[in-house]
Image 1 (cartoon, one colour):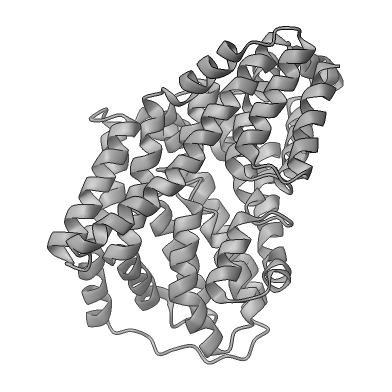
Image 2 (tube, helix red, strand yellow):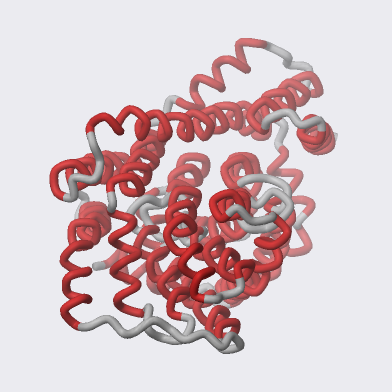
Length: 427
């Protein structure tokens, strides 16, 4: 009954158009009433405690780093470097988008910020080159969602806090799966592009490539600093976010000199707005998370999934299908916050490695950003490219399918995730 009350109230309030954060608070109140423990102090205390977390400080700083890089020229130089490297092959601009997305993912960890940068820089070029606008927009959208998987990842930060897991281990475990997501859409794009009779741009000379590499060098140093610093224990993920933001600010203002001091107010304000939305969601979700534990909803879920508990692969397939369904109607952050406290006890009871599950869970949620009808990243591409939503949705299907195939291969063959994660952990 408690599950029905919680989900029923949450879905009913969302159907009325209430923002997710308020819907979470209202469903929490409904659950309190069902448990006969209605108390405003419980509500207030959990909201405050939900946002009072040192690891969550990584979110505003990674968001700020992403904003600075887009305005300060780091993102543009990364795209230009990718253009000189692979722009000359058939469908080269699409491969540029994929390479640039992987590089940008290692800088900011924000799917929305990376997708906006890629769409603004590459979508007009792909249209002028003669590529199908829908397929081009779909490719850029699917490339943008690599950001929550390759470290540093805001999704891993939120999941790590909600599941009480090591964020550093999640970061290291996400490197290879994130790159495989890029490989999957590269194969899909090769299949799409070979059907288009488009003359690729001329091959860049060695001098042009070296010049582009030199210009992007300052930007490429950032992921090295973050990954090496985390691996060597020099700083925590939260401190890494601060390092990323400060480094991006110094490079943008003192080296590239494309970010003026008069622009800082708008950059900080934009990052603050996005951060406020995420942090309020986290705070509101902690009310539901506490009540879910009190109502023993995880125990009920374990009983419900009992037929699958003896087979980890079947259990993971069932969970992934559930998350896929939720991802079509809900954004990434609320999905993580709502489902993590429910699913983690099930995963642990089945003996599944929580870090391995976390990678699969975040990949699934990332793909949810391009699944209609919600599809936050689809909306970003449609807005930046001034295209209709149904066009972008049609164009993203082959790439979204490729990424789902990679995800389920990781479910069937856990070694794809666990072996590289162990290798990074021991180096």
